[in-house]
Image (cartoon, rainbow, N blue to C red; front, side):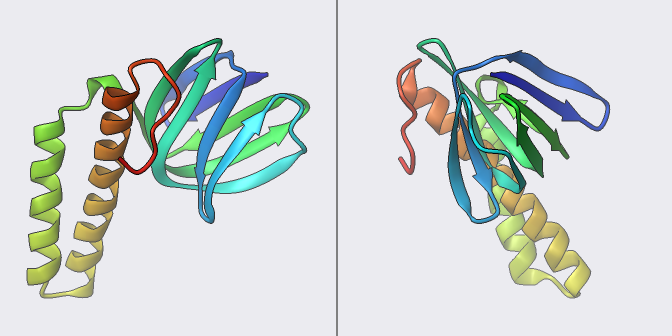
Length: 142
């Protein structure tokens, strides 16, 4: 099946794949070839793509997925390869966001920190999945 991932500024990924694991608003969903048509909201989380026996792990930061006629189009706010994530930096940003939520003096500041927390948590999860899987099947919740 063809997978096309589009960020606001460019096409990020456009290749063939055999399997996807998508972080939807209601949980993860597995997509195989000949999947039934579907439109779904996507949450922050790990997008896993299997090409042959290799898995690619990406930190997906919200968007929409459209599955139709053996093609998956993903429109997202942002996406990043797990292998390029700096774990220590992401963990530091999570700590800062937590502190920011605890000290927030307005709803706006709280929400900004919550969004930062959610983004960095997804990045950490993608990195750990990539690190633990080493090309094998995905390891969730490690």
